[in-house]
Image 1 (cartoon, rainbow, N blue to C red):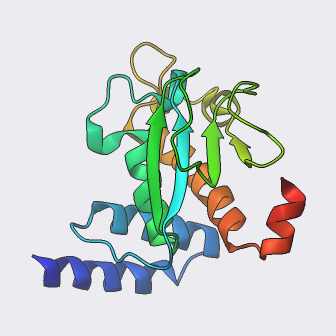
Image 2 (cartoon, rainbow, N blue to C red):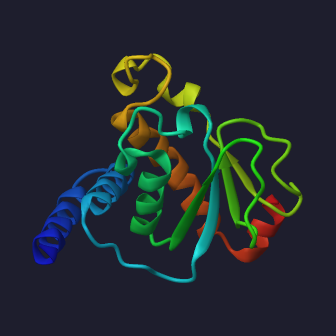
Length: 171
């Protein structure tokens, strides 16, 4: 029920406040992502995830995919995220996104001078952690996706919370 989810969310927020700030935010992201309703705040932020390799969701249920978890985690951080998934080489949607997330240096994703790109390095995050990978040893399992989302969510939320002038300089 919604009341039960709200009570669980409140309890998890109180418990999370006892730990470090980073662990607390990660726990809040996970609890909110598991609830059945998320508040939508502020104007919608259009994000494109170029989903090849580790970000593709291969072998996972839809609710465990990177883009689904990231959208929920960003909403938990106060960003009204709307994520569109593209395969590598696909055309960008119209209207253009405010942020592109990819796991590789991508040269063919539009005008780099106007579109901020967040590069995620799954190898750096997942290498040496076999418990975060599927049996193929390459693609992340649901726990691996949570690790990728924690990194990407923190960085994307920081981009959207930065003052407009700072965002312009980063482009």
